[in-house]
Structure formats: structure tokens, C-alpha cells
Length: 584
Image (cartoon, rainbow, N blue to C red):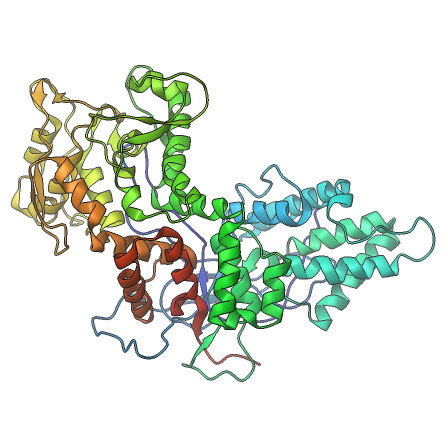
């Protein structure tokens, strides 16, 4: 049974759709930082009721500093203006932006269900961040399905077993007091506890204790407290003051950042004791999270977004033998080649941009002509191919190409935007862009691109895009190494002039890739992308500039990938918020 619920209450902050990755197609990869887009439902923090339909809805642009509140069965808007001020902020004082209300991602939903109820199978996949009427009904059906599966799995997660005869009220109260706070990621209010008991009792009266459990769980999994990461206003807070987010809210934010899942009892206990406000105790907890196997989930999600891994779902190339098995293998290989770094005690970003070993299975070894045997993904050398780290992984090169040819423009834009944080403006809206020329014998892709973008109106952007993209011309549309293109010797020379420490001419791609591996600007950009990911939106507010500068400086000096996560979690932008003064 799908129970649709009405929620009431008030919550503050901007609306944000969580972890929306750059979009892309088979023709090339997306651009820009990882982060969300605006517009989602306004939700409350009040208690649940047993029946009813609807939920608060609203619209929002996802940026800026607008205030907003919402109540059940209502509408609301969140507006504001974003953008980074050109005035340097005073970083001697704590700085933070308004906190954003965000919906759990599909993977966070699935991991929460798995961690709390031991229900697997990715039931939340496809729910998406929008909360219109259709989506709300879908969420109700998924919640009911999960409740049924959890009920069948009761012995693995339930705090008690109801007695066969006599009163089950004591066990019912344990369900409410122990399970609901895990799902809400926050202690229950008296009103919430009363509402949940009323619903639980209604299920028991309808049939039996199991029905009460099922109704109780179905309600929890539709509640705003579960669906959203909510940052609640504090009582009597003053507008404009910078204050820490609540300890439980910080624990939730921290767990979903590092584990892509909910906080465990130890982290919740640290929040209850106010330990997370102490930097030493906080770092102890973060170190524990990094040592847990669930850490791999958070790392995987970061690279999924940063490298635009979702584009593998639409990847199609004309090359013979490039089938779905190769595509699936490339997706797995690319993630492994990035995330396996974190199995070492001190992974460094320089390792991400260097080395010629990649994780390949038998399908990939056969397609790319690499020796070896066995179906497992193992680290093998692709030496002699001008490959250096993640950027020249065959999967990356295939993602940023076209069906029948390489695509220097897409590769250049990705390098500038995602690796160097250089804003690449779109073409003028009134500019008629000719189609990309089809492959032609005797005309290399480099020559075709140079000709296509030679007009003066194009050179304002393509002078920097092409120079970066040509560095990868030693790889064809499926990421295979080549020395000729359409009978013309491959030329990977070029130049970068964007005001970064990698600026200058390079005779070969190897020279540019070596610069990238040691670049402090690359490290600063990577750190900014990690902060984007941690907050689930691009950090465009001027208040975030101090955190960006601090992270860029510390990570630029060390390059320590695990320490970067610790630094992000301790940054002002992650721990603090700008109060809007709507507490009651």
C-alpha cells in the first residue's frame, strides 16, 4: 500500500537539486563544475499524519541569497542572484553562504536504505530530484515497496521482536525511538513522536503489529526529514550572522559527503555530545570515516560527477568491435583507475595525472591490443602511448569524442573547465555554427577544426580551446593510440594562454601533461570541484571564496587527496551558514 502523506512546518534556506552532474552525449563530455540546478519542492519539518495527498511545491533558481519558507499543500518560490563578487572578501572572519535545502540523490537514498534496513537492489534509482505530483506518487510506491522488503528482513535491523501475546507497546516505542531518528538523522520532537505513534497504532488496529511497522516505515520514507538534507533555523538567530550548522545536521552532511550514506551511531553520538564542534574530535571522526569501507562510495560518486561518467550510458562509436561490453568495461576501468589510488595511505593528486597503468579486463585488453589474460580488472601498462594518468585513459578519450572521429573542441573544453576551472563562454546566440565536417582522407581532424574555427569571431574562445584540445590528438574516437589521422602525421603540439601556471607552448602532449601534474592551479581547481561536490552545488557565492582560497592553498602545497577531504569537511563553507533570521 502506498501511503501518501501531508507534511507541515517551516524550513529555511535555498532550494537545491542535489549532485546534478554535467550533461553530455556520445559526441563529447559535459563542461563546468559538478553541482545542482535550482527548482524543487518546498518542504516542512513538522510531524507526519496518516493520510492525505499532496506536498508543498515551489520553484527556485538554485542560486543567490533569497529567503523562503513553505508549508504543506502550498506553493513558494526561492529567488536571488548568484555570482562571485569582484571585491576580495575579508577572510580574517568566518565566511559562509546561506545553506541550501537539497534532496537526497538516488545513490544516497539507496545507501540509506541499505545501511539502516539491509534492503539492497537500488530501489531509489530513477526517483530524481523533482517533487511534482507524479514523482511524489512514485516515491510513495517505492517507500511502500521498501517497507515490505524491510519487514521481511526484520531480524537484521529491528530493535526488538513483538511478543506473540500481550501488549506490544514497549517494542513499538523502541521502533519509534530508535529507528525514526536514524531515518530523520535528527532527534524526534514530541510532536513527531506522537504523530508516528498515532500512525503505528492505526496500522496495528487495521490488522496487526507487522502492519503497524509497515505503515510506520512507509511514512518515514516519505517524510521531508528523510527526503531532504534540511538545515533548520535556530531560535532567535540574527539575520546576517555566520553560525555553525546544527551538530546533527553537520553529521548528516559529513556522512553523505564521505560515505554517500547516513551517519552511523558513533557519528550521531559525537553530534549529541557536541564533539563535532571541536576540531580535534571532529578530525578524529573524519579519520574514522575515511578508514571505513563505505568511504569508497563517496569517492566513487565524486569521480562519477567530475568525470561525467553518466555519459557512458549514451556512448556509441562507429569503430568495429566497440560494443556495449567495451563501453561497460571502460566505465568500470575509468572509475577503478581513479579510485584505487585511495587504497594507499597517502594518495596524491600527482598520481592521478601520471603513470601509464590502467585497470583493464580481457574485453578491454583485446580491444586495445594489450597483452594479458583473465577476466578480472588488473593494472596493466599501456606504455609507449603518451598516456599519463586519468586524462588520457581510453575511456576519457572515448567520452570526449564523436562517433567517427576525435573531437579536440570537446577535449579542450573539458580540460579548461573541469581541470583548470577556466570559464569557457558559449558561442554568441546569433552565430550560425556550421556542422562539424565529416572525416575526409588527407585532412586530419586537427586541420578540419583549425579551418572550421578560423574566423575572427571564433578565435576569441577557440584560440584557447583548440590549443588545449590538440594535445590529445594521439587518441582516436575510441581512445586508441595513433600516430596518423586520415593519412596525416598526428600533431599534438599547441599552447595554453589562460592566465594559469600551465600557460605556454608545448611541443608534445607529454609536455602539457607533465605541467598539469605539477600545477598548483590544477590542484586549486580540483579542490574547488571537491567543495562543489561536498555542498552539492557550484560554489559561486562570494562568501565561499575564502574557503576556496584556503583549500586551494593547502591542497596546492600538499596534493594529499585524503587530507583534501578533511580540509573540505572543516572549511567554513561546509561547517557554517549565513543566518536568515527566520527561526522561531
